[in-house]
Length: 377
Image (cartoon, rainbow, N blue to C red):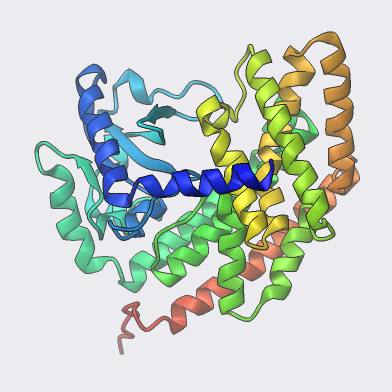
């Protein structure tokens, strides 16, 4: 992508502010509510809930939300390893809606102990709440959000989530081979960003900038040495700026071709849509331009792996051959090419994660905004 096209993109992204983006999301939910069986309520999640309404909403972001359904609704029945997510494009904005059962919102305690939910109930995040159910939950969550017992519960939630991700390694290997293992290793890193957000009482930030988020927290703690270790685990520590730029251009081409060839489901399906191209290409270009070329490469990784997975199966005979070869070389470049290398990377990630979670527990102890447990006796 040339600098001219990048400049055009940066001008386009200033058309919509956060309040307008929320309005688009609210309108989409209202337009579709009658057609969703068992639909109960909807609310925003992700970084948008911590943004000022008059701030520009970048076209590189999607609008994240949860749609909540009765437990017996067909909308929340799990279909194999594919996440229960709806993707849509509305007025030029990308919407990603996670489909959740009412049981995950059964009580204020269920929300207070869940880092995916708790922060969003301390701010105005409701999109659809016809009977005031979400508002009632918020009134009970807000006074207890900073209590140490609930902060601890949310930290345990992140820790258990990461342990489950590590436990999915055999399934990922069975479904997709080494590319599945590397994707699962990348998924495990999202729980580290979540742990930092819990300890800081901030909105959880995931998505394409997750490695930037981790870097920012580690910089606050004067522990950028840990960030270098994280990049090394994924074979990105030595990546140069020209290499990252070349990888982005290649990943964009593979993404476009994979969308044309794709015939069967893939675990990364929720990101494999033409309207999400800016979420890959433009968001990575922005990170590169900001000086985060290695962190951008971390976000390219799942797209590159998913695209070559698809082309190696659904592509033409010639495409199948070069896609498989390119993926094998990509894994070698990440120092992830053999089972022994992969074992080492997972072991390193476990040790690294232990250190990060220890840092987060220290943050909790020192955070004056957290109401610490009172000692009795």
